Length: 529
Image (cartoon, one colour):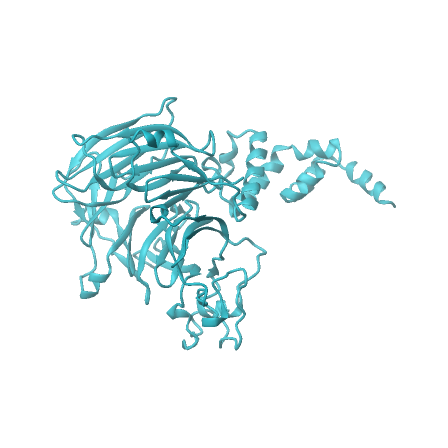
């Protein structure tokens, strides 16, 4: 029987049988099959085929907010053609994400800067719903840009406070409500009179406006860290204490219970805080703490003890979180933290609900990635071998000649197999900004080589099934769960002007658009194409 006859017999099978076969194909095969004949094209356009493809993509790729739910109801309001378009876009972004970017779009425009009204003290930026870019400036300016209409970023709203309403901000926090309609922004004033300003932005309005909701007076300056509209709470800090504040009906600050202070706490300052379901997660320089919100708000009621995890031989300077994912019996979040000497660490944080034989929840912290900038103490060849309980898959002794990962230029043989390149013509670099995607699938950072003028924009994406496993030397020192975050430069900025240093960044995880902010307050955009 010839191949043509086999194809004809295959096409004579009932349509439901052919459809069942097609639903087991991956995206590449479906795209190739629909080019063969009209019958295959018609079958490949069936909704069930694309629902199956998108469901598989949900497990490994960042998806738009409307498709992030892990059930069939997420697709009910999406037309079949839109499903096809979203699936193809997700695959294209995944393919283009680690490749070189062709251009850097700089804005605001020269005309805007010539008026002398452009703010310059950029406090930070946040990507909201993978579409809206929020910029907050210390001069009392809030800007919102829409990245969906054009990758250059169309400004849709701006609000500027005068001195009477309280400019001179030092920190901010922003969060979207559970309906994805109202964005709330809180800012903290750093000079007397101290107060918090609360702003709301209705993203559903045709003409978006930024409205000041209220001002909350403070007795002393405080640093804003996080906001949860569902709990109606703000997380702030002063000195080494985290405080919770009710947004709409303030009845005084509530200090989160902490562990007894020791002399080591002088070196264990607060980097960030995030709400994680009914908990508040506090990331410090050398530890993370988990506190139950309701135990703090009701100190005389039933208490859930605070949990803590220590990071030995590290000193973290900054941190970036993914969104919290709620499972049947646990909460999960990805944390990206930076040690100036050793590099960029990635951890998976899990809070497990009490089992039948347990009373309190459990905190689990697992290192899942490392981008080394120096010679980590944990990676020393003289380390004692791990115990059998540490990792059953780890070798009992280090390989005699560990092979470096050549895709990662940090691994040069002159100072060891786990060291940053510090040859005669290269010096160790440092990170000036980094960000973890809200879905935890992608991350980016900006590395500048010491003594040089190049700022390298680098990206990372989570390793997919079928990827090459880490080397035996890597597994021995860091465990099988920890992957090497390889060096993938997508753009390089060269400038002798220190004001061009990138101090903050954000990106749209599903669209692949990268946004950078420098010391001058200028914004640049790296589109995917």
